[in-house]
Amino acid sequence: MPSTDRQLRGYCSAMTNIATAPSAAPSTDTPRRNGGQILVEALRRNQVDTIYCVPGESYLPVLDALADHDSIRTIVTRHEGAASNMADAYGKLTGRPGIAFVTRGPGATHAANGVHTAKQDSTPMILFVGQVATNIKEREGFQEVDYRQVFGGLAKWATEIEDIRRIPEVVARAFSVALSGRRGPVVVALPEDVLFGAAEVADLPPVRISEAAPEPAAPQALAALLREAERPLVIVGGTGWTPEAQDDLRRFAAAHDLPVAASFRRQDVLDNRDAHYVGQLGLGVSPALARTVGEADLLIVIGSRLAEITSGNYEIIRSPRPAQRMVHVHADPEELGRVYQADLPVNASVARAAAAFAALPAEPGPRRWSAWTAAARAAYAAHNAPLARSAELRGVELSAVVAHLADTLGDDAVLTNGAGNYTVWLHRFYRYRSLGTELGPTNGAMGYGLPAAIAAKLAAPERDVVCFAGDGCFMMYPQELATAAAYGAAVIVLVVNNGMLGTIRMHQEREYPGRVSATRLANPDFVALAQALGAHAERVEHESAFPAAFARARAAGRPAVIELVTDPQQITPVARLAQA
Image (cartoon, rainbow, N blue to C red; front, side, top):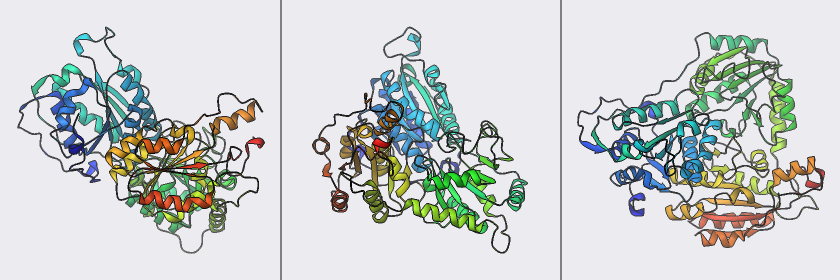
């Protein structure tokens, strides 16, 4: 395993997009190298600067080769699931494939969590997995797994390198698949004999990615639909957004006075302070926004798949034929028409579509829907305002905590979360201002928040990174606090402790009132646990104590945990468990 000193040297945080990498002719200098050296060189040429891993003997040549590349930082996690989640978070944050290495068998199945997240979240990611030698395959060797079969339906592409001479080719294809069209995860298995073997193999240049652009007639077709609309609504989501695309979206919305809603956990696509932002279509959606979607007569969907949560279980936006007229922009042509029959399907990346739509000339004067836009914005502002503390409430009022974060943190602060009812407070009361500041799993993966926060802090150490986690969610990967401490990732973790699995308990009370089964949690002393793992830690029992505790956590200069003791009855911002 590479030394810690080497891991902390020469970390390259450049965010250069692979699509803009200069091309070069294949190298003619082909020294004899082992498979690990050839693979690491292929990663280096594709501008990989970080990998996340749990070391395994099945890919020792890769670990050895990494010792010679200070430009690639190796982050050793305490669990393969954390490594794959960190790779997903890196992909979300940078737009480049996050890279994870795990050993065969149990290492791979542990890492499957992050692969599923990357698939449903359309995140570019490549998972490299050790494999038994090719001459003993199909004998159920030690930790042998058929990765094509196991990951075939979970990843965008699952393959195995069976010839050392094809390593550069397969790696290049892995980057192309991960980044093209609807982005997603690739799994590449690495047989031991391929990695330990040696050959003279020519390297390849970095991949170049082409993006689909709207057909020339598409913007004019959109303009025609707008001329006929009375109540239009833009819904944004998906991946592939850039600061330029975000600005194009802003200009498009402003020029035509269009309300813009974010799909589930994509709230950072448009500055929430913008007068045209009207809220998020996710967990805890505003009833007013749900009505706005239902009453709209034109939906302009840019990047989003309109999956189950965003579409309100396919009821607010019905499938296959919505009640509203629909423009559907997506980078993957196979996504268009798969779930929804749009009036205007547009096969284009979000960046190309936003640029084309921003160039549409605006008609003079106010729009017919200006009052509609203003009303939707006013409803969002009312829904976003912190709640008054209820007299019967015990513990921390979470809306005040999130409001303090929104008022205190800078525009580029990164907020991460996993899954659970506690996320409803974050989605409702935080105001995202910049792209790449919301890292949350749209597939609802518990435990995602802490690994994602560590990856974000290592990629951008100058930014504040705050993880929001429930007590059940945090206990999925609490050991990764040791990873954060080892690499100097000064993340701040807010553990919302209500002593139960809140989401499941809420559904349990609805379906089987009073019959509590398997949802109570016997939690450790979170402060002592965090301190034992090298973190600063405090316990907060009332929101009035949070600002000072948060200030101390920011000043600690190391990972920090603030346990927020909350009332189990506070199941959502407005509902109480007894009402469930």
